[in-house]
Amino acid sequence: MAQVQRAYDNEWITNRGELVLELEEKLKTYLDVSNILITNNGTIPLQIALKLLGNGGEVITTPFSYVATTAAIVWENCTPVFVDIHPEYLTIDETLIEAAITPKTTCILATHVFGNPCNVEEIDRIAKKFNLKVIYDAAHCFGVKYKGKSIFEYGDISTCSFHATKLFHTGEGGAIFCKDDELRHKIFYSHNFGHNGPIDFYGVGINGKISELQAAMGLSVLPYMDSILGKRKEIIDFYNANIDISKFGPIKIRQNTIWNYSYYPVVIEKESLLLELMTKLNEMDIFPRRYFNPSLNTLNFINKPFLKMHISESISQRILCLPLYIELKYEELDKIIKTLT
Ligand SMILES: *Cc1c(COP(=O)(O)O)cnc(C)c1O
Image (cartoon, rainbow, N blue to C red):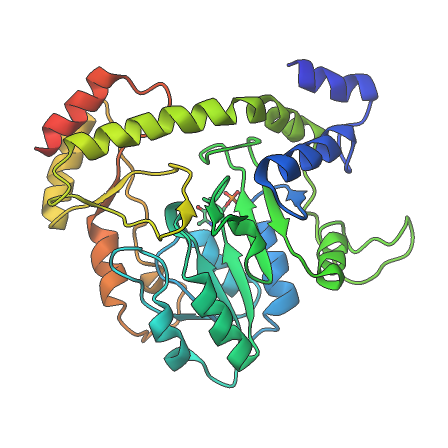
């Protein structure tokens, strides 16, 4: 509330006011990134990235992500070309990317699923070899580091979501990261209608700006992030110690990653068992989420016939994200674990 009051006292509600600029500076330090532009959600950054780098071509992408990843490709008049995922990391299987490249391919849009980094080195190598751009949907990656660097520093453009359901949030919000000065300049004007001053325009743009009220939310949440992450780690350690990991494989986090404890997905043997489990948990007022289902190559707005994505389709039907939030009590955790055994 005190932060919101600042916006009222400043009589400045949107258009990159004091609170937005302060949140950007604080996030830059907290995340240890070289640059950041905060936006009004985590989807607009994907659209801006695809507008600038997609050129209406084919975009190699993962079928295992939130619908926004694929929808942004179609929305920007590009064509999604799906490549199946790695069965344990759940990120795009980089060994299958080269076979999917055609003369129409312009970029690769991959998701660091549940904050688990893609094989960024290999993707970078392929992109350089074929002269492609790389966009990472890093919506889940607040605070993730890979090889000592923020995961947002990888790829030509990286995006994040600050939606209320995400680890760090501004209600609605997001961010876009780009190391190249020229491209970053284009991103900046693209997110503000293309403005170059009040009556001059660099080029076409859209409204990707976040308001002071949302920045106030972010400034209020940020001081608690370390304690939130600590609490989530405790819950995940508890799950790991008490769940039969051989039966409910948790995801494998890539080596050299500082993870952010953003989700606790378990992959269940069969969909029928998952549904039974969900019913039991729902009866106890516990509501796990089916992230991500359906596999995005099966969406009704995707041109068919499409290639079958065996691993993604199979995992999508069998994956369940167990409750993970800081108010979760140990009695509730016990109940969840009992249901699973
Ligand atoms: C949440 C999410 C988005 C969309 O972010 P919004 O802030 O809700 O627009 C995009 N991609 C992934 C993987 C997400 O989980």
